[in-house]
Length: 466
Image (cartoon, rainbow, N blue to C red; front, side):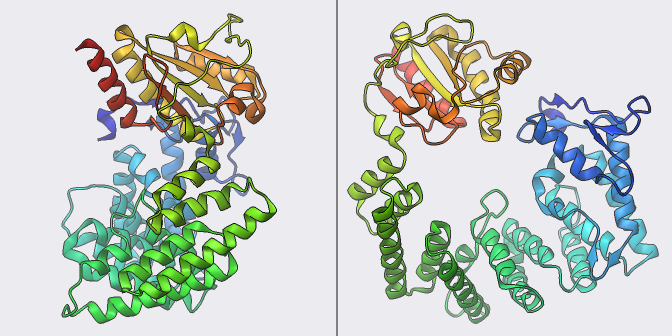
């Protein structure tokens, strides 16, 4: 539960003294949306990927905001609820009592006004994204009601689909959700349908079972088989249309290939891969460093079973991968840390070292900092160390973040961002880029993030002890 985790205090207050200020933005009716302003403070403070809690006065303001949106009901077939509320990362991380309080309010509104689609949709969102002790059918009750009250709302179909993937008892609800998505598409534009289907197929953050996962579990004599086949063929057509518009989009190619795999259409699968291969090869003729084309070809050769060529193109797309298994050469020119002291890899020989290429402006990088700190505190005394290489341009902001988050290891900063000496020397093309190096200077991994960092460092440290 959120309360059991270590949380960063969100010091954003909407007090009388601040005269309506909310995280530096004015929160006045018809001026700035309270929810947008609130999310803005999270992003600006780098807290969007960390655990946080909400100050009491801010929570009060947000509760009042949502009550007003619920009271407004349905306007021109839509609610006034913020569109991004369906992304469960926000609902899951609100203090538990806040969505509970709003849930009770929405239920009360729905009892007094049974046609209030906003209340029904809010309850659907909350019950899809929060683990209350509720009867299993309660989500589906509100989902059905919201669907009837908001017949053009494609987001409700998406929520029903992801909920069906969580509970295998509702396998049939998954195909119903997709069928409804296509029905609602008749009133919208095709790119909108593609975007929602793409989320259902590819959004690993929320989707536990994709359409292909459901379909591949079916037997041909299953009563749902024909309906699922019809839906999968419709999804295939949507991805084919999208691929005509964006022939170099690997994500579209990838999902289309998986759909064709599920349908057993091997000829179409091979053609899709070969067509995409031709598109990427043509792009490389125009620009040999086109990373999208290089990555695309790497993925295609991997799908075609040619691991050697796949590796070649992966390294071309991301040269840092070429260092894995190799001794990393020392810095090619003299380097100093933030304190102006000379620093080199030679000083760290004999230690397990993480060279962390990161920046304050990089959300995923900030999400890794607590994990790096935990590994540092756990293994530093046994020979683990960290060197931070910042791609920031604002030294003051970097220093402030390091101080606020108590990052005790040394940091390198040259203000050159992607043109920095070490970035170019080691072929860094994206961040976070964590180079984990063993005691002899050999690169163990350039993808040592999350739990993998702890696991890899543990192996190195324990092996040395042995």
